[in-house]
Image (cartoon, rainbow, N blue to C red):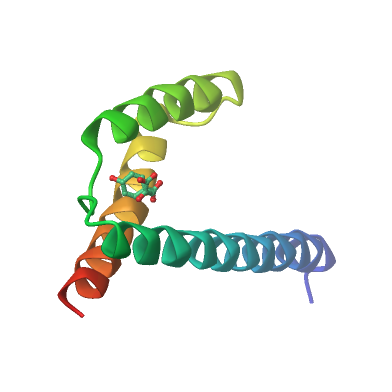
Amino acid sequence: MDETLNRYRESIDNIDAALVFMLAERFKITQAVGEHKATHDLPPADPGREDRQITRLRQLALDAKLDPDFTEKFLRFIIDEVIRHHEQLREG
Ligand SMILES: O=C(O)C(=O)C[C@]1(C(=O)O)C=C[C@@H](O)C=C1
């Protein structure tokens, strides 16, 4: 039994749970955004907004000593999924 490893893993499990809750909240909001966009005939994607989000988060990542390329890929992965949901809502 490695107590040190167990303690680290408990902390990792808490962080992973927080990530899931935060992602769930983000997708609740983007669901509302998708409905709003579909109702008002707005395009699913807004590349200008995405550029600003990526620029901002890359800087936050640098400040937090997190790899900015990884951060951008992670955000891109999430946004692409959101756009897919928006497109589905638009198609009805
Ligand atoms: O802000 C929007 O317009 C959204 O639809 C949300 C969001 C995002 O997930 O952050 C998703 C798609 C857009 O291209 C930009 C941003």
